[in-house]
Each structure stands twice: as structure tokens, then as C-alpha cells.
Length: 199
Image (tube, rainbow, N blue to C red; front, top):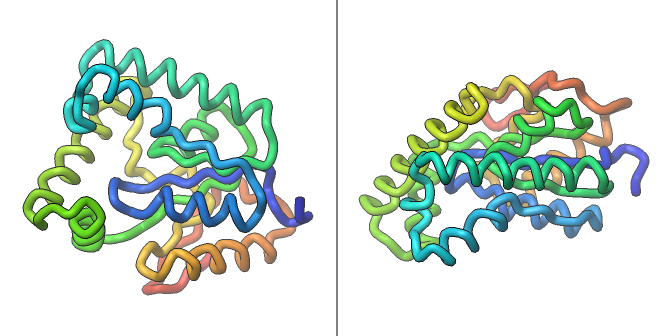
């Protein structure tokens, strides 16, 4: 492992922000294990015959499943090194559990996220907008009920990544930033200024 690299990097962001693409590229670049939070939820939804939208509804059982899945993910990152942990709440979870990590949040406009989702899923812009709005509302409700937090808050993050460039460019920006750090940031977020990231 390169000296400047933290042993755990978390990737979070709103639906359609490009979390998975960025996380996979970072895992490949650094030869880290890719831990996908959604991997614990999507199979359950499929097993129950539910769509992601239906599975997102904050019912008592879904909220209970959330807590169990989040604990499994936290237990994993506590006992493994060289991990890229991608999930909507990855940064918040490591922050709340005081687990050292470099926490990234992807910042990108809703318009761009809707366009990306529409192209990826081959649905109309109206359908994409409806899905993203519904998903955001559900996620905020679930995390508010389970953890009493607003997951849109960037409080725990060390790096706010501009999600507009190509994924490879974002990876390069993150790598450049990490190389300049003498030690792991302590939840002191960078600020976005246009397309530049300022510490």
C-alpha cells in the first residue's frame, strides 16, 4: 500500500451521482477490495419480489434490515484493510463509529443525475426524475428514523468531489489530493469552488 493512502476510503453521494463507477475505479487503481453497501439490500429486494422503490419504503421491517446490514458493513471495515466502501451512508457510518477513513462525497446537480439515470436505465427524463425524487425522500426518511441524521449533510466528509468530470478525472483529483496530505484528514471537508476543490 502506498504510504499516502488511508486503509479505508468511503464513497457516498446522492442517487445517480456515480458512486459505484468511482468506487470501482479507485479500487482498481489502488488494488483495494470493493465493498458495495447495496449488495446487502438489492438481493433482499429481489428475493421478496420488490422493486428498489418499494424496498426503499421506511417500514419497520425495512428499518430493522437497514440496521442489521449497516452493522455487518461496519464490522467488515473494522477488521479489514485496503477497502473502498461504497454506500449512501458509508461516510456517516465510519464517522459515527469513529473508524479512521478518508470520506468522499460526490457533489453533482440533480439535472445531471437525472440525465445519467435516464441514459443508464433507458427510461424517460420524467421517469428518471420521479425515481430520483422518490429515492432521495425515502433515504432521508430512513436514515432520519434510524440514526437521527440528515444524510445530505456533508459534516463528516473529508473531500467533496466535483462529480461533473469524467470518472477517471475525479480519480486523478482524489489521488492528487491524497498525495498532498501529511496525515489522514479529520473530517475537515474540502469546499467546492466552481470546478476546483479547495481544502
